[in-house]
Image 1 (cartoon, rainbow, N blue to C red):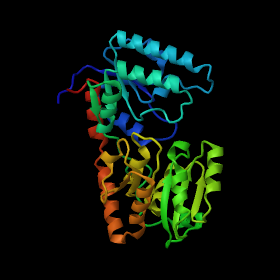
Image 2 (image 1 turned 180 degrees about the vertical axis):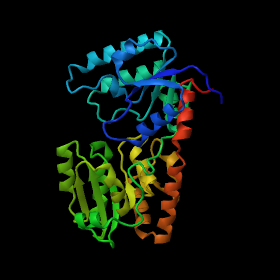
Image 3 (image 1 turned 45 degrees about the horizontal axis):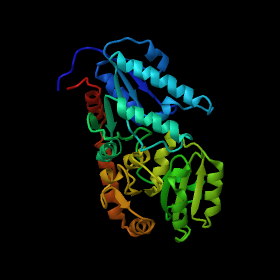
Image 4 (image 1 turned 90 degrees about the horizontal axis):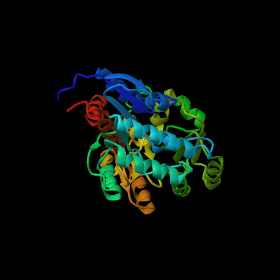
Length: 354
């Protein structure tokens, strides 16, 4: 591939997250290394008054176009930002959107979310999806067929520190666990769309040495209260609060597997994070996940609650040798999600690489 030698200016929304994140930090870090991007910014007003040629505008979530604590502000904000993007398009900027979800999990405004997403589908010069599932969705729901690029979600390998070769003793003691316990992890923000109640119901019926560890920050106290009330067995452990990045390898060191029960999902950074720390996963066969998870290689897929129980039994009864094999498969898959390759594919979507 040859590179056009004109410097591009990139506006990315968001350019970075509040906390360090391997996907954003590594993606834009590798793009910067290409030497083709002149400057980054994530300010809509600066975009409005920027007349660099050529220029890329890369958006990730539709909520970026209207998100506000105040409901009265949201439609005004959406109108202003859509007008800025239209003016940007009219002067020749290249609009790129990465579709991470079928819809916002918790925007609080379905109408605005639909307007924002429809705009991005219609007006984006390029749309990035992570697997064929996103491409199929865009074709079936929106009849969008052209300039849809499949670019993998990058990994989190070593981003929060190296993999630990044995369970972290300090964390075991703090959580009241022993090395003889079989620990299954649900790590990440605690939100209703995660469907954690379905996992808890299963663990309520399991022997006490099978432990479910729910770890992460709660964004809905009433939901957390419901989960704790539902947890009737002492084998369900809550570690509530923001988990510092440096502690993530310790949490993964305890886990035989990570468990997910999304109510609706396209892709999941949490799944890639688990694989990056050599922890196989049990996930619903939805969205991108059947393209990422292969049974008996890096985890298991399930289609129903009954199948979730059956596949969880596979982990419970699994020999240490077999579990080691799945851990190797998990890490091997994640390690292959190179940001160097992903950045080059993204530059193709930007119309920079040919």
